[in-house]
Amino acid sequence: MADPHKEWWTMADIADHWRVEPGTIWDYRHQTRHPRKPGQAPKLPPEDDTIGRTPVWHPQTIIGFKRPGRGHGGGPKRNRAENQGTAGSGLRPAASGGIGRPE
Image (cartoon, rainbow, N blue to C red):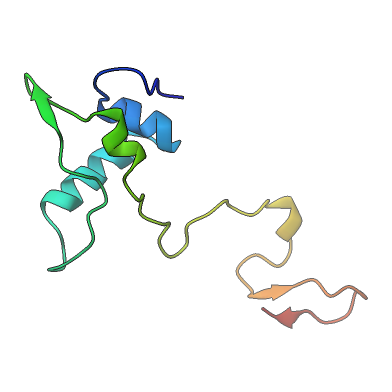
């Protein structure tokens, strides 16, 4: 976990705090600076400063920011072994061994 007592956090620190890949934070920053839709909610607050060419944030800026939720399809992936035989069919195995039901 990123150290909340540091003076500055980099994108790597934010990724560590949010438990995402550093590339995700880079994408959030790009999407915030160049939104696809007007009025789109920012995915990352504006940087508090830059050190050289590196954007940095005070830890409290990130901790107090409401992180965007996961989009469509987000969340943990299902275990493949659990879905063996039903992958892609839109059906789940029936409890009695009969015909599967649509989800």
